[in-house]
Structures are given as C-alpha cells and as structure tokens.
Length: 214
Ligand SMILES: *Cc1c(COP(=O)(O)O)cnc(C)c1O
Image (cartoon, rainbow, N blue to C red):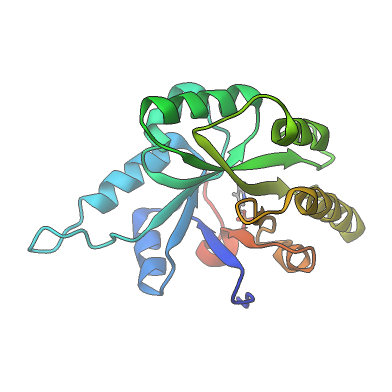
C-alpha cells in the first residue's frame, strides 16, 4: 500500500486478534484503531501484559484511536487509553468527554465526525452542526478539536464518493488551523480517492488484516 509520507495510517484492527496487531507492529505500524470499547480495552490490557524479563512493555509506543460509536457510560474504558477519539458524533458525547477531561485533568484530542453519506444509519454531525460547535458560544476547555472524520456513501458510484469527500474537504478547509489539521477520510475501498481530496489520515482495516469475521 502506497501512501504519501505526510499521510497517517490508522490500522483498523477491530475483529482481529492481538496476534494480528503484533504482526503489523513488527512491520512498523504504530497507530491502531478500534470501534468497540470492550474490544479496545481487552486488547490494550492484553498487549500491556506482554513484557520482557525486565518488566518493560514489548509494545510501549502503540497509539490507539477510537473510531466507533461511543456511549457516554463507556468513556472510562476508552479515554484513558487513546490518543485520539475520531468519532465524536453528538453534542451529548462531546459534553461528556469535556466533563471527563475536566474530572481527570486531561485534554482529550478529538475529531468531529461529519455525516455526509446518503445512508441514514451513519453517525455524525451535519456540516451546519459542526460549524455551530466550532464557532458557538459553548467552550470545551478539556477537548482539543484536531479535525474532521467522515465516511463516504457506500456505493460503486465514484461520483457520489467524490461528492462526499469534496464536502468534507470544503468544511475542513473552512476551519483549518495548526490545531485543526487532520482530515480523516479514506478506507480500504476508497482511500485512493480520499487522498485526492486532501486526506491527512486514512483508516484501513481489510487491506491490512484481510476480511473481518463478525
Ligand atoms: C471498520 C472501519 C474502517 C475500516 O474499514 P475497511 O473497509 O476494512 O478498511 C474505517 N473507518 C471506520 C469508522 C470503520 O468503522
């Protein structure tokens, strides 16, 4: 898989065992992304338990991202362990993360998930809601807005996919700053197109780990 050197790769390891993560780690991969709190937590703990004879972690520099729907009662399973929550998809969640950050003296890095796809089922803010969050009165002192995450419509029609990515890129450019600089678009099937629309981070599962068995 060929990526420009300034584009980050989040290896989506959901539904794959820790062995698969270790194999990718050995090949140099460091960012891993999970979409279910329990699964993330179990993998973090399992990998953390793997130590050399001096007691040092074998995988000290894995960086975890969370990319799934996050319920507010699961924050403590996720926020202590991740460097980025890519999938902040509601005000309710955003407020809960800010409160958790305050209670734990942390600033949590997040991406706002923007819903541009045709499917109703996909999570996320509308473009207008994102503008309101980023320009509104309400402040979130324990949240750092690092950019946007989005998914294109699931379709073979690449003009639709391009349209979705173009909207995300447009919104991203409106708010681009030294802090707000990640545009997380592109998965196994559409990452090449996402790169044309300014993706700074792709989230790839199937192409790295093979098909998921649900
Ligand atoms: C599962 C998932 C991916 C990876 O999808 P692949 O098609 O396997 O590359 C990327 N982003 C999100 C949000 C996902 O849930």
